[in-house]
Amino acid sequence: MLLFPTAVLSVTLVSVSQATGSVSDPGFRLTSFNRPLHAAISSDATELMVRLTALAAAPPAPPPSPAPAAAPAAVAPSAPPPAPVVQSVVDTSSAAAWAASAGVACIREHESGDNYSEDTGNGYYGAYQDLLSTWQSHGGTGLPSDAPPAVQDQINYEIYLSGGWGQWSTAAGCGL
Image 1: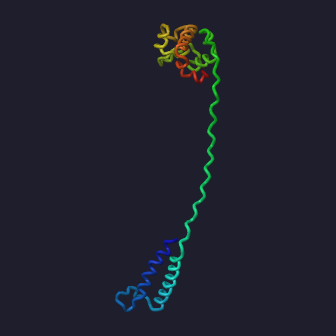
Image 2: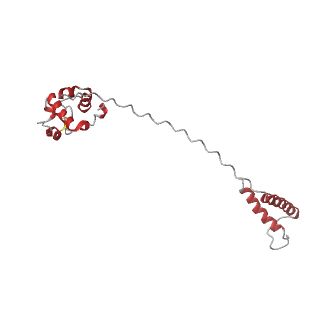
């Protein structure tokens, strides 16, 4: 909106300054104007100059007040913390009691589908998916997947007693 009056002002000022010369003056560029048109332009230009001068003398309009700050967006409540995992009760009085507990059965289910003969060829064997070196370091012989369930339970009970649940990555998911 301010560009239009500025453009008019520029054109008008040129016209006004040229209007002060005479049509017969060789420096006067608007030679095609006749006197009545020249007079109309001069009077319109004069009126425009008066108005622009009045606008220039008027105090500047106050800047628009900033929009009120938007209230902070409501923060969506975060997801509730996960429910505490109930620790499975594991009877550690013997290897058989340990192996029969729900938490250890869950580990076997997740590790091998509770298949004591599991040998997937990935370097882990038996119901507990033991690494061969771990199996052997706790007294196991041969492959864990070839050992009877009671032997696998006994060896893995000893693994648990020496290192806790860290042997099995699925223990946390089983509440252990």
